[in-house]
Structure formats: structure tokens, C-alpha cells
Length: 295
Picture 1 (tube, rainbow, N blue to C red):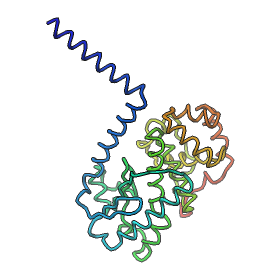
Picture 2: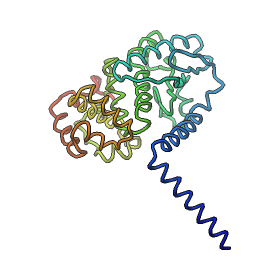
Picture 3: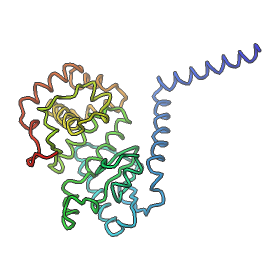
Picture 4: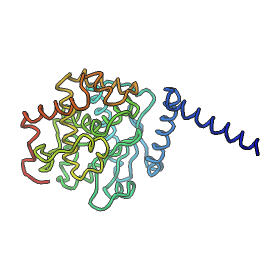
């Protein structure tokens, strides 16, 4: 029994030592994150492995038979989006080419993600995989206008920005920052911003704790996204794109988010949110809604 207890004790020490290495060693932490990212990517792509494939300069494209005739065009548009994003957020993806999955309808999104009826998306990013709704399914737009509207308001720039942030920081960011950054790049490239009646910052705002801890579960997503955009725009106001890129680089060193904020912007968490609240109240942009007033 003494031998068994000694072996158990040695095993516990080994587990503790491994955990210590994972927490304190960048090399082991990076290996763990890479392995986990690979597992999530396999899960995110498993539904599309047998779909038709096309290789572009920057993507591994997967699409259904319905989109055969526009697959090459979509690939070209996606590659153009990469160059537009890179002009704002420089990056080198090297041999890592994300998957671009062209989803044929909202029902496929719902089935894959387990969403309820009425829940949908134009695009989703997860683990080096960008999924977009085919412009063929943009049924709120006249059929003859769908490709043009896709170019003007489509999700490629937004979702690829998520990939760039993930690539440069290795996952070290908050959700509000990720969505805010993707929207600010989208606005600078396409001139498009998401406005709803519920997105005006005249509404009761979410606290920073709520945005940090439960962004995706907040009931008014339009408001949460708008707050994220406004907060990242405030960061750009303070130090420009150079500041944002420096901040992303510091996050890439695995510096905790608000410690990186202090390092680059000289503001702690409370000073940042107080400064943003004063700043955004003086700009009518954050109180606008869609011109038609619809949700």
C-alpha cells in the first residue's frame, strides 16, 4: 500500500508540475492553445469536409452545389477583403489559410449551431473558419441586386478582421473589443455601420462587467455591438490606428487585456470607461438610429 500511495503522490506532483508549466511557460501555453484551436477548428469544419472545394490566394473555400457558378467570384471578393483589412491591420498569416465556408441558407446555420427558428447570421467566425451566408439567400434584397449588396454590405471584411485579431493575439481579447474592432474596420473599408432603433446609446447602456463577461448573452445585441464599436472608436480617437495596432501587439504578448490598455493608453479600466462615457455623449453619431426607425 505504501508503494501505491507513493506512486499516487508522484502522479499528483507530476500533474501539478504540468499545470505549473502550462500556466507559467509561454512555450507550453502556446502548445496547449494551438492544440485546442485545432480541436475547435475540426469541430467547426466537420459539416463541410465533403463540400466542393476551391483554393484561393488566402482561403480554402468550401461551398454547396447551389453556389458553383459564383464560387470563384466569392473567392476573388474574399481575397480582395484580405488586402483591404491588411491595409488597416497589418499581419502575416504565413501558411495558415483560414477556411471560408459559403452557407447556402439560414437553416444550415441553425442546424450547425443549434439555433432556434428566427435566429440567423450573415457571417460567423470560429477557430480559423469564416462562415458566410451566400448572397443568393439575401432574400430581403431584390434578386438582381444581391451580389452588389453583398459587395457593399457583406460580412467578409468583418469576419476576416476577427481572424486577424485571433491570429495576432492568439485569442487574448474581450468579445466587445473583437466586435468593436471588426465594425470599425468594416466602417473604414465599406462605409457601413449597423444601426437599429435599439442600438442608439441613448438607451440604458450595458456595464463594462456585462460586456466583459456575458457579451453574447446580452438581450439587446444591437446595443452591445454599438457600444463595442463606440469604445474601440474612442481608442482610435486617443491614439489612432497606430495605437490600436500597438495594443493588439501587446495583447499578442499575452499581456492581460486591461493591463495592456494601461500600458498603451495610460488608462486603467475605470479611467477608460469614464473617459469613453464623457467622449461619446458629445457626438451625435452614437445616438442615431436607422432612418426608417425599424428594428
